[in-house]
Length: 409
Image (cartoon, rainbow, N blue to C red; front, side, top):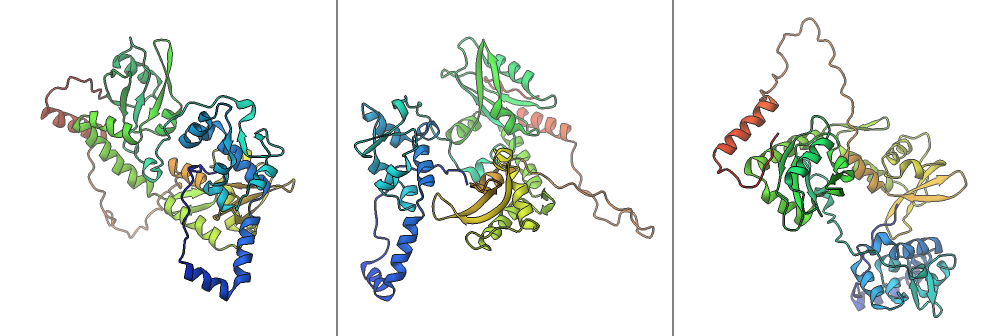
C-alpha cells in the first residue's frame, strides 16, 4: 500500500480503558499482554520508519501539512523536534522510539542534530507554499461531476474575458462535447465553466491548460466550497440538466464490470470481493498463482496509477499486516526476493473513476415459436437532443434574461 497521507498533528493521549479493567487483564494473562506489546513494538522496522519520516518532510506532504509547515518555519534553521515526529499516529502504531528513528535515518538524506533531537530537510531546502488540501469526501467526490464537469479557471489575465475562456475551451474540447455555461471573469480573476458529460471528462480537465493572453491557465475540477459557489451561478435549467445526467450515469455505474476474466455486477461487488480475499487469508499467506483470487488482484493492479512500474518482476502476491499500521494489505513478491506493498484502494478508485464495463453479449435468436412482442416493451424515451432543447427552452421561458453569460450549445 502506498504511504497514506497521515495527519501529523499529535492527538492527546487517552487511557483507552478503565484502570480496574487493565489490572484484571494483567492478573489473568500478563505474559499474553507483554507479548502483544512486544509484537507491536517489533512491527516498526527501519525501512518502514524511514519511508514514513521522509514522507513527512517531502514537498508532497508539506504542501498541505499546516502543522509541520508552521513548526519548521518557526525554526530559523528549519529543524523539527523528533518528539513531534514520534507522536504522530503512524509512528505510534509502529511503536517507534527516538532511537528507532535515528537508526532508520542513517542512510537517509534527511539531517539530524544533537544526536537526533531534531530533523530537517537536506540542506534546509525551502518549503513548498502551503495549499489547501482538496477535501477527500471522495466517496461522493468521485461522482460530483457525473452530471457534467464543473470547472474553475484561476489567475486569468486582466485583459481576458469569459469570451476568450469559452473560445479557448471550445477549441480544446473533443468534437462532440458541449459547453453549458461560462461565468463572467470575477474581480478575483476566476471563471466557472459547466460542460455536458462526455467520455473521460474528469481526466480531460485534470490535465487541461488553456492559453489565455499568452499565459497558461490550468483548469481545476471544483470540489467543496468552489463547487458550491459554481453551482449557485448556474441557471436553473442547467442545474436540472446536470441532475438528470447524474441520475443517468448512476444507472450506468450499476452495470456489470469486468476485471481480468472475472465479471461483477458493479464496482461495489468488486470492492466486497477484495475485502473477502484479504479477510480469508492469514498473515503472510500467499495467493495461489493458478487461483482466481491471484488473477483478480493481479489484473486489478493494472489499474493502479503506477501499475506497470510496480508490477515489474512480479512473481507472487501475499496478504500481510501493513507497514504503516494495523491494517492488512497486499504485498507483491518480486523476482529479486524483495517485497512491496500496494494500495488496493487506489486500484478501486481508478476502476470506479473509469469502470471497465463488461461487454454485453449479442441477444440470441428467438425460437420460431416465440411470439413477437413477448418481451417487455421498451419504455418511451424522448430524443436526447430534442428533449434537452425543449427543457432549455421551457426553463428559460419562465426566467428573466440573465446579465451573466450562460452558454448553452
